[in-house]
Length: 428
Length: 111
Image (cartoon, rainbow over all chains, first blue to last red; front, side, top):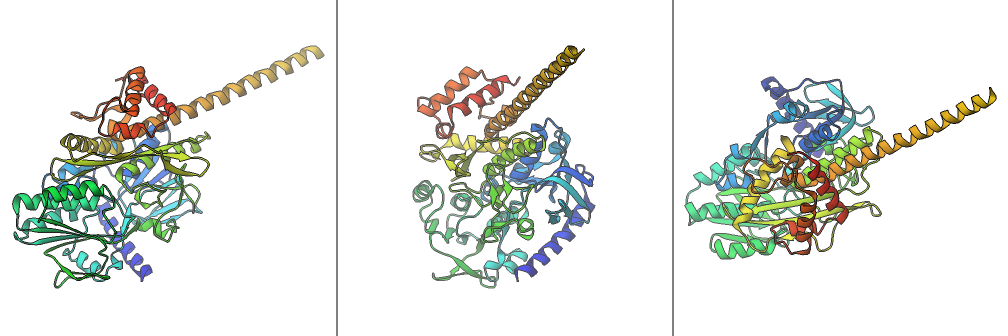
């Protein structure tokens, strides 16, 4: 079953990849026979790794980045497009600076397979590229098959995820716009770990804000498979009680088992069925398909084990895995900010290893994650993760990190600037 | 003749040793530079690559900031004497050595 869905997925990817390369764009690079560093995936992790290998090697090490999309569309801030206060253009950044300014060779394609013995990757369009170092940053794979009926309902465009920002982000916004006042929007959340812990609660807040302004008789339901709000819980719950009372309802311990697309109904393992006008179902997640397919997802076949000092895979030498695909050390969230941090630690380790230098014995990672509770007010969570050489893992420093004391407008300004600065740091 | 050749061998050995030592010192210096640059890059997510934020950013640029000033601010965030939205939480996770490394790095970059 799983195997067949993979084959189907890679066939689908293959045809799209070929189409993508035929359509082409100005920044499409040549396909080299060999690159010292090949990066798979141009998101927060991969784009940052590609740029920083170039920068930290003083532009001496050549990098080829494989990415199927012509532009970067950010997941952070995409909930504001769904809420109506930002546009797709606001969250979209081209890849041209990564190639033009930093000399990253960008190949617009999917990767069909990885051979860790021969040290090659093969593109969906056919050719192979040899590497000295491979960085895998394929993001997440949404496990549609874990919820009965979801795959078909998603493929038809009826039940959206919009958890990978892109066409579904806009499509979900359109569903909300065309919903009559008095309708119900329901978002379901899978058991942790999943990409962006506070993201679903931010999205629900955005939709509630939109309803409050424009469709005041409508309702937001959060159906959470977890025991409680998984991130910034007290801050979200207080804001909901103070501002979205009668609009937003939070229901923990609701694990979706099936969807009925004919009646727009959610079916749970224990609780009663829930019917809604707009269904936004987030299934369980795992490492991006190519990481699972190439056996790098060696933790429960879901996440990729890595040596945290260098992010080198515990499965294959000279392959580094970063971003949402990895098996996390305790208290590390799956976030864009973290992926950017992984990208830098990995880039420095790769530059050191390819230059016969020792790798940094004490790297650290930082994370700051902002959530908009309406169009202006924001709450954050921040953390610092120091590498512990003895236990070979990252640990948060006692007393460091934390959350906002209350939603506030100044962090709304910082949050938007954070987004613009991290897009520039990753891509420009 | 013998003395000369011995002297030559001695000179050669010394030269090789000196070259060897300076080569490894040079390699170590290059490695330290790389690690320091990557450490400072942990600030760039918010404060811009090499400390240069985008036009109109309320988050300050760090490029060219005097080292003494930056160390003092980081310590003030850390001990709570300078209020902040996130920096008091971030700086509590950094060692004094990391604060020194980061501050030296940004001070040395030309605006």
